[in-house]
Image (tube, rainbow over all chains, first blue to last red; front, side):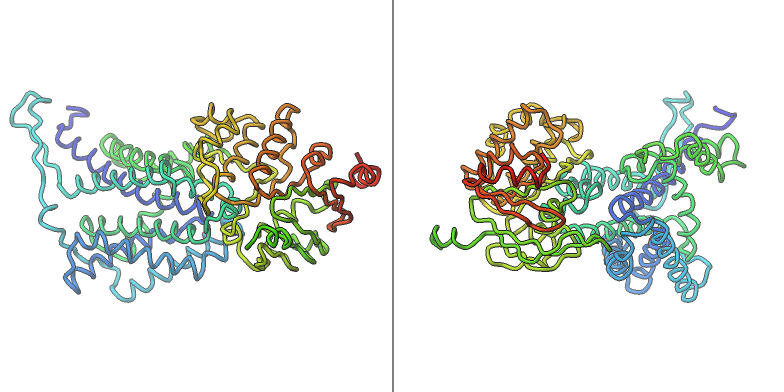
Length: 303
Length: 241
């Protein structure tokens, strides 16, 4: 017993914290990748996440495409959407101040959310996750508490989110930090013109980076569809917290955004246990402190 | 094509080249020719337009007009990455070593665009220091001289046969300058074509088959290797050495 609370309750709260952290990590990872290459703060990230969730719902409800296929098809569709946005709009803004990209993508949010509210209403749509991921996993706690009857029920879907998010984050980190293609990306972030002078088609790389970022948002949306009601505003609610996570972690660091995402999910969970009233604001309080002490973020490079 | 015909037609031919940075008109009709296997220098004071000329040939200056032909192919409207694929490589004055890449990643960064590049072993023979420091985690942790060698080494791997080197000796100790001079000599013996921008006239003139002198965005003089002595006074006047 900690704080007079049973271990099973604590365990569940921490699991939920990690799972929230997985969403923060996936979304802030996408933002960091996009910002590093495009110099654009992608405010539309939340809307793209919402689109991913809606698309997952549509695929099942309208055409009967399963969750598992959605995990593949939705990111591809969102990636294609990203290419469209990048070619039509964003590429004209690269030489301008960050503010223009932010304003443009904010405008996109208003349009996208407006279209979805108009078409589907603001109330949530239910999504049936696959049976394989439904239910809960019994985890015996006897060894820890000494009481054979103590068990913890872990929702399988949340475990799945944590596992698959970790895998995606690690794969992305590996791809960027340890592969040849990743070295092109890192180099182009530092000096795009010189990388072009080596014969690498940097504009295409930038386009595909944005597509990858939006695909990540779409993938997170698929995960979210199985967890909560699908609504047009689900992205707007989440993205504000994710931006705070990005500010805390520091823009442009891949591992930094992943670690910060998971860590802040856990911090939120601890606060929810210790002092529930503060759990919704703790991330913003940390953001303010980090901004005062280390403006570039915990993992950010000092400008 | 037989070797003789190849030598008659210049490998790079620049005519009436104008270049701009925004409102600033930097090059005013530059014209020069480089033949296969030549080492040619661009001399001139700061701000004469030497770097801009190199970058224009490489396609790194957005606003340029005139004619730049590479093996007879007009490249003035081509994108930088396409020009690179024709077999021209650029080594920037600031060296352009990437801090988020290891030494080895920096070395492997330029993709191989043609056969005939140096192998890694040959590169480590040419630059023994790099071999010792290949596992350094940040390319920018190398000394200035080592960074310069890395910047040259990486473009030799790609198979490009024309090298545009922008002030490779700037700010380096004499012993390193000597080493880089030897490397350029070896590259010439291997048949590379080199366009070298230099402030260090004594370094450049020793290596060069021909020297172009730039002033205010124009070529004002061409000095052949054989004319160096008779035109030395003139050159000193232009370069202010």
